Image (tube, rainbow, N blue to C red):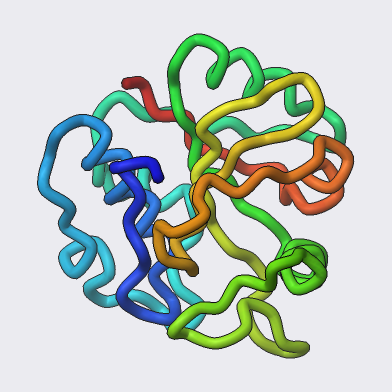
Length: 163
């Protein structure tokens, strides 16, 4: 278990929960409720972390298909990244994993529900990514997602957070 994991408190607060993981890693107290205040029904996009100045030492990275090299370099140097995943791809991949993960919020992806989901990338090992997913409790985290699956799920936007 990675101590910096933070399970999201609200069904639409994955991005604030990810920001809390960065806070925890930096030794700060998490402030999910403050980040979540005024959130739209679909929740905040990952750029809100930078645009609303929730955290210092962060930058946006807009990456195209198969352009994850910037993320690899970031995590290889010890940084973490909050990334945007397409739930229509990530949700079914999660549901197919054994043992199946459960969340107090229910299934992550249902047709017509959330289009995107934020997770924190904490490592890369040449064939898979290590993710902290706030939808689930800390048990069994980080999640390991194969490189090809991550590429299929990655929605092209990341916020890279320095240590």
